[in-house]
Image (cartoon, rainbow, N blue to C red; front, top):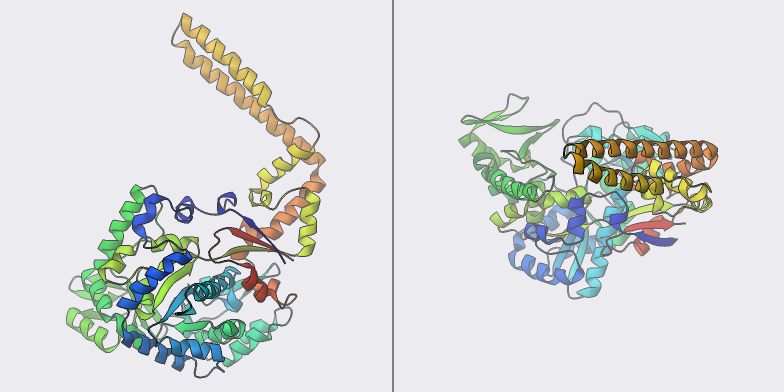
Length: 520
């Protein structure tokens, strides 16, 4: 496998918000703690070590042992789970939805990032243990976001009428869906047959894929874990403290010209029960669970939080805080939208005296198989060129290969110069004529620009076949017009290349913030 890299700034795929974080724009420094480089993990370790309670370590370790009790545990996973009890063990976490068959490729890249980060940190700080963790978004209730995935250009959909937190869904129907997939998908068939719930099934196949690397999978839909955040639940629902803090940070970011990613509600918890995950809304002196008959007064709510904390599910605003209160965590690995929305949350962490984790962008990559690379070579274009818009790509090729002069820059400059001279002469006669001349000049330049576009369109017709080949490559590399990693599934490559995951582990550097292009 050959590795090349493209700077993020040349991909046209990332917002200025994300790029400013990557390139350490000073404007964003107040919104995070430490920048993601290996040197900054030592003070992060010290800060987390001082603040993380031993009882939390015991609880997390026991919960994980219970969650893995029906899975043949690999020694390295068991060692990692038990090591969480030790004061010198820390985690690096990524989170993701419970997509079918792992969903888009970037799920794989997230996990590769946390595994390789732990390797780098172990080499740098051998006196400490580092555990890669996948935090399942098992409490999410948006079935529509996880019900389908794309494989070899075709969309496959899981049809079910279940409602509520998707991690609690039965896997009914998924084994049958596996029968419709091409190639050997026994890994997933086995998981969906053996797992009693979607959460269990995901743990099974993720363990099969990454257990040898020591990856630990945690399901936060758990009473013991929720008991650790009782004070947060009460303060959010009854006092709305997180909203005040997040809104303040959001206003500051907007004043700096950034578009914020998430909006904070007055209450940032759902009520969670079988087949139900609905928002809690204040209603006068009561707190109603929307679209249900469930309602609490303040005393009943306090009692419910104390007796059944597992029935309160944090939304996107408070899930990060929950994660950092539960785990001895140093860094969170996420995609561009995740990284920048965490920048809205630092004040919330400070309010609860929880260290803000290092925000580590996940690896970004594109896989190019040999037959596609050969097609790219025939186009005469570089891989960087293909990151441009399709029409710009065509125009670039036409200008470089048509053999004809298709630009009107020289003529446009002559016209611009002539009209400027005419404007000066006319204003000597009457000042009001200048605007008229300038408008006429602009109109003439616009017409010249249209002539250039027509010449290019005519030349495109001559080279229709070659442009068709370029378009075919573009569509392979950017399915549906977006990054490959956001659409294609890893099964596009894994069956033909069993070493696929190992090659990713070998080639992707978690601290080199560039776009990776991997060619077989």
